[in-house]
Length: 261
Ligand code: URA
Ligand code: SF4
Image (cartoon, rainbow, N blue to C red; front, side, top):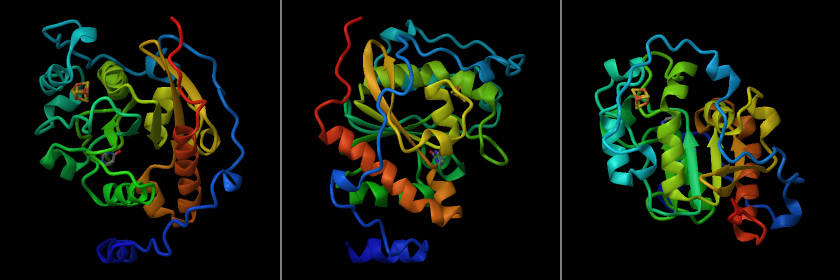
């Protein structure tokens, strides 16, 4: 471990750090394909019920499914589909190589992320980077990181259901462009959106879910949001278990084959 990382983790109270378990034998039991396959991710019922009065239209120049990554970023930057466009200084789009097997999805950008125009720039992002480093993964090189919602939510920072719904299509197109084999859902907002459920993270983590995006099967592993882990350090071991599960999936052979459509 580098001295810098050691110090950073110590500062966050996260040492002793994630101790990799001995390969698959120590992984939690996995139940595969928990959820039925759905060709098109349905809109979660909880979100459909959300108030949409403030939803406004902003139509990209091309149909969504034709947008390249750059065009999608531009369309998001001009988006006024929910009230968050009024308070944002800039949108925060996902970042990382394309295509790439690993994708992480958080809930939405914070203030610092908005300043920098990149997701997860703050302390939770440092924790995420450190956990990735333990898996020999680096942001910008090996993983694509994004959020369910692309504009900062003032106040508590947790996006409202109406914004998650309004922003959903952007994420769906982003997933189609990233072509991940596996998505790690960081926290309840991403997990519930991607899995079409209102179940809590505690009941979704520790197993493998599978969904179909744009005709491709993608495994989804749910884990605690890094900001939650920082508040509740007793959960860090479970968080690490989830990432080990994700790593096992990607190093195995049975993950995310392209399904016939
Ligand atoms: N920053 C992000 O980009 N996403 C989160 O979910 C939290 C902080
Ligand atoms: Fe558009 Fe998403 Fe920003 Fe709402 S949060 S204005 S839907 S980009």
